Length: 216
Image 1: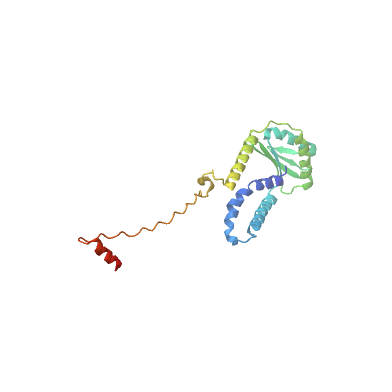
Image 2: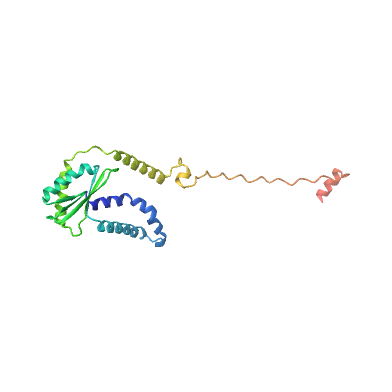
């Protein structure tokens, strides 16, 4: 695929991290405006567009090594320009007006063909990419072990994000960041009024005197 599409897909993959990271830090600066998130999203898209435009034209091929890919590129280059000259992993095509360089990442099995000419011909580079696409379709390589690993990691992150967004009650508060809600305590009954204790009768007092004192 083209380097532009590869860059856009990479930006879409890290957009979630950008939203919860640097863009979230800029939200207080906007003053809580309803247009804050659309403006920040536009700013992120603008940064991605600038990075894509200033990068050199390139083609990216996944799941292949430089050793497997170089003979195919040499075949396409020789058919496109018989006067092409090779120097290591770089080739100059004088009749087509551009130069290319093969960059590989052995661990991830990814190869990039970069247009390194200062004054490159857009027509020559476009014809080279079209022929390279047709040639790559007939190439057969073994499956990459990284594909299943990245797929499992992606599914795990999606499940974890969904669980944290829903925040069910069975998740501990340490993971969700939300304090566990305790059941509301039942209101206690009002205390029953207790009459004050009757003072003891003084010594020598009789029942009649007590009754008289009460009646008085």
